[in-house]
Length: 395
Image 1 (spheres, rainbow, N blue to C red):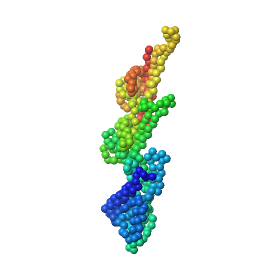
Image 2 (image 1 turned 60 degrees about the horizontal axis):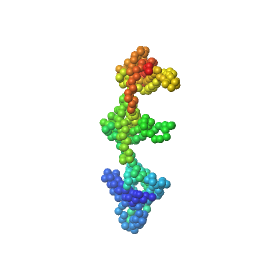
Image 3 (image 1 turned 120 degrees about the horizontal axis):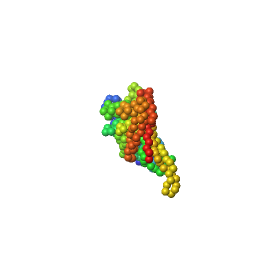
């Protein structure tokens, strides 16, 4: 039941679009005649116009009757979604058949190429079938005014307050970027011993945003493509994803990769993959930042029995040791050269200072020496090396 959008308004909307299209095609000389449409939802009016034609009264327009042929709605209409199907019967001049064919083909293309719109507070998603020839009929007025009949069907899905894709904008840094598609993937951890909702720490959630972008000769578009295929890593971008008035999503993301695949005679597009930029722990050795792919920190305390004032025996710490098992990226910085050199030259007695800055905590500093090292070189030439660095203190 389209009590929310009057079928007469739908008839007027389609009538106006057909007339605008007919004028454009005639002006562009794509059709030989100028045709005017009159679409009604009143079958009595439609029948009267046809009857007038049979009685010799000239009809100034190609007329059409829109009819509702079906309605599907949710059991609970509070969701604000329903689907309606319609048919339009067209009654025109046989002499205009070539013109009508061109107009109907163009209308079908436009409706399916732009298959969503807003109408009276509803988002409307449209499926339109091609107008089909139904036959010819003779006028009864005695003049050579043979008529032709067409019919086409369409289905509209109405979503109350719905948001259309064209209302979406993507802003990367300071620049708005056109897009072909957006794929958001949000992952959330499920902690087995937690029964309540938690919003921290941020590492328990993750967001991945995959955007397909048309290749365009603009500074912002070319810069993003260059960043995607370039060798830089840990590139951070601020993304603003606005979905009409429904939601605005603004976060920092790392560019994790992307790609492009196309064939000849196709519009070229490329894909960029962003991953939410979560707070990270910074590491330095001897005051110089290092690139760590993976790290494990282990601490062991040495204890011995000790009697307290109540003559009870407790274990008390007498010494502590720590160990860092880390995989470093060789980036040709002075500290990377020094550490890898010590591995290759079997230098294991040089003391180093390791500083860890965990988000939300004060910095921790440890003294350690290299106990073990491993050099690895991949087939792409990337060099990494593993270090086991240890330290000890007496309590």
